[in-house]
Length: 112
Length: 398
Figure 1 (cartoon, chains in turn blue, cyan):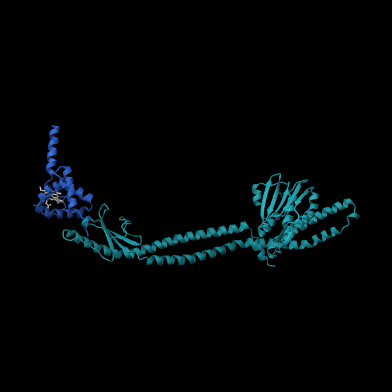
Figure 2 (cartoon, protein in one colour):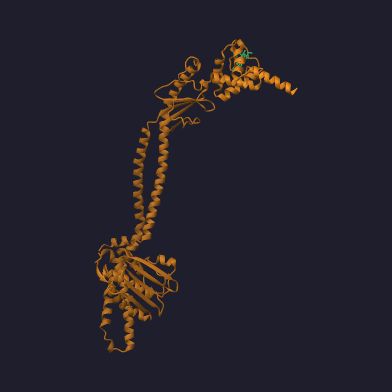
């Protein structure tokens, strides 16, 4: 039984591949069909939560338990696009995805 | 002859020291108050300056935040930080991590403050409500031109200096005020001593010269003994007279320095004191090298020698010994008297100090010795043992 679960885990992680892949294959894949863009959403989080630590914590919070209260979107946007479905990613993968999300859009080192 | 001159120099060393200490303490307190006042003034000026700069800095920060807002919205297309040649700035996130900075002095930033001066720059900190680009703190920096500081320092130096001078002057005045009664008392004492001594001179000399004229062969031994006692008493008075005269007049009479034959002088003075020593059954032993000379005022040197001899006899026990030795550069006078302890030796040169009040005298003898020694740069060493005796060694350069 134990050996079986280990094998399944190995296969799963091999399927998921690197960090970038979790983010690309999960978040980006779905958000292609979603508006506003991930970049726009990122800057909304930045506007509200400021620092890396606080943004990441708020993101994890929302993605695990999406509620109106936690959302940064306005009432109208939520009316129009609805809330995000609760993520099915495991914690480690979710954090990897969020880390990649942060690295992709963070402003550090980009301002000239 | 000016009396005030004599008075001024009569204020003893320790009194002068007390006065200096008072003035020192006074100046110290004045400085303390001045420093305190200056610090308050300085800080007030600084706050005033910051208050005026603050309005300007608030304007700058508003302008900067507008720029940040635009940058936040159009970051996908446009990434140039809003700059202005009038000021430098920086943005920090909620965890106080620096996001971007054009500051000259980013090390000293204190985000918990609103406005402060550091390293010749002024920092103004504004906390944002909406964190554009994640920035919670905006820091605006301008150069501190320091004209206010120059102005403040100038004022502090100018007014502080003036106050200090004023305070010191009043301090000196206070000292004078305190001194007045003391000076008055010393003045009276000096006058009294001067008048007394003056009146003493003639009668004492009359007694001494008349005793000398007495033909001892023509009177019986019993009478001769009495006359001898009178002579001793007269010489003692004469000795005191000379000491007092020296004390009162020494600073008004310039020293007449000539080459003095110390050996001869010593011999003469010993002979003069022999009669006194004999009366106490004290023997005077001498070991004087002949031909020892020194360039001094003979009157002053006689005072020095007289006082050493007189003390050695005065404080000696009955039937004791006085030993005098003279070498080039050194004169030693030893007695077999009551002796002194360490503390007494330290105080021995103070005027009016006497250790044995049963013995006559004013306690001015060693004070005179010290004054003369000081004038000529002699070194004086005193060794003493209680109940054994003392020795005084006067040394000079040959």
